[in-house]
Length: 63
Image (cartoon, rainbow, N blue to C red; front, side):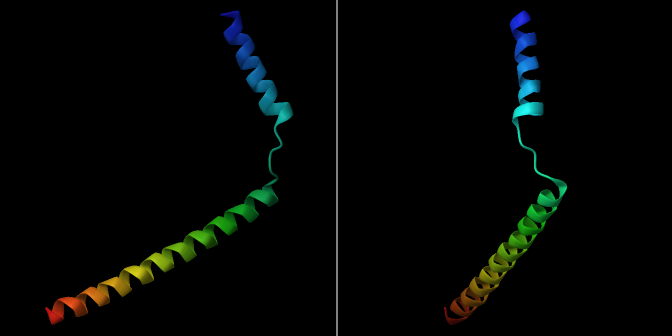
């Protein structure tokens, strides 16, 4: 039981003292970058989907 208590104390100490947490400004900047990248990827996937849809519709009309 004592080992478990020491483990949690060490975990807490590590999280509080040894970890460098990002600032709110850094977090906001990262969130903006992730949002823009996600939007761009979603648009690329949408355009690919529509392109393949058009291509396959043309192919199916021929056959």
